[in-house]
Image (tube, rainbow over all chains, first blue to last red; front, top):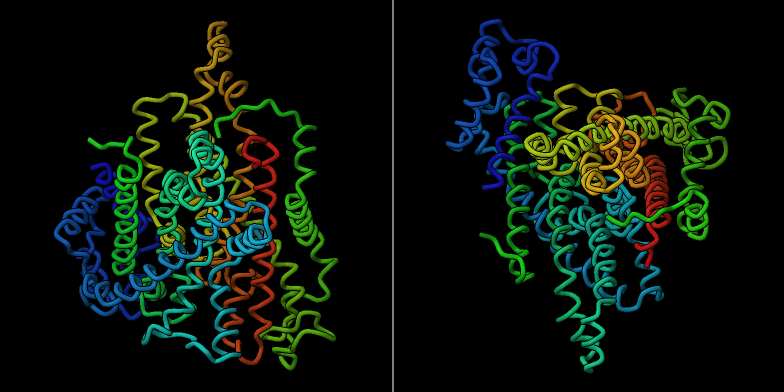
Length: 297
Length: 284
């Protein structure tokens, strides 16, 4: 229920952005060859001749019916356009997410187990670099090294799983860094707790202690960050998809912007924002599972 | 982040100075500021001058870092590019700082339905995945330096507002605030004299960390062609033009990317160092 006002606000912001366009949005969308009749028709079909409130209510109504409108350039249903490109983005995002968890969390645990060891020091430098390198540039560096010089992996496009490797690594790199840092610091905090000392005094082996006592309690902040990182992955997909010619929703958005196809752009942004909100709701719900003290009524 | 240690400037600087990474961050930020301030003196050539017969020249000789697609000196463009990166970073963070402090103070101090409305509105901004809010704003307003700054500033506002609100909430129940109210201080005076000074250290840390993010965001928008427009030397834009010649001249995309990473690393290290210096409890 909490998400409904947020989603209504998201739709409102998306509706309002059209009013930010200087000049007549309808004329701008159709380009120079458009006749005044065409412009007038588009204006009324987009409700641009209506006040903002009316336009907003009608857009919400259409979204609730699952209708995102027709794209201006191709005339296709935006739903169909998004359905075409969505699987590619989902595959890329999910792979990057799995990669971020699989590398970031264990790295953070090892760093917390042996703080200021060689591994920890290297990991901390690498994570700082991971946070600082722009992913579009990381992608380009990966292409130069692994496609152009070594010839091991394809430089772009979508096909076999090999095509997925470089874009997923580029997209995941900042998230790996964030997760590793977060896991390290929360684990270090938990390891200082009294109950951890008690468990050690009882003779619990360090491995069991890390997994059963420390990790589980360190997970809540890590899972929170994970939820926020999905936003990074969804937005970052715009960049990685551009660099790797990955036919996903991010490239569709960029195409829509340069074609001034605001209907397609609005639909794409809305779908990504809703995805992000839903994922964060799931993250909130998972707290109850991770920490029995938290309940939802 | 709720610790309220009394930190004198000298004690903070002492802690900051002992942190080697923080000093590296300060040094990097200093180098950037110097490059931006003294760009005309430092740059070996005019960043806009095109020498077409020298296009894609490899690093070395006349061009330290080589020449780009149009035979422009990459080193000079990187030096002038620091102006764009810092301008976007500083101005957008100032916008976010002003808006965020205002919204956070009003929400935290007044509470009730005002607080609820402001915070829900900010939740809406936070519901957009990274980059998408900025993309939505810039695609409507049109590309360019000013709109990029505005988009980045709006994007960063909720973070500042939240931290200020949290700080205000923790301060406003303190006895000295009640005492100030009892002797008849106005709300504006209480906020200015007693509430905001408590947020300053955390705002400084946030500003440094958001500078890093703002520089990354500007580079990303410009890379996509939605941010700063040519021929302005933006690092993100330079990476984008270098993409077309990766096989024969990978240096064109490589150096501006390194510059972005260098600047972002500097502000991240500085921000981390400031946080550790301001809040000794967090240094483990």
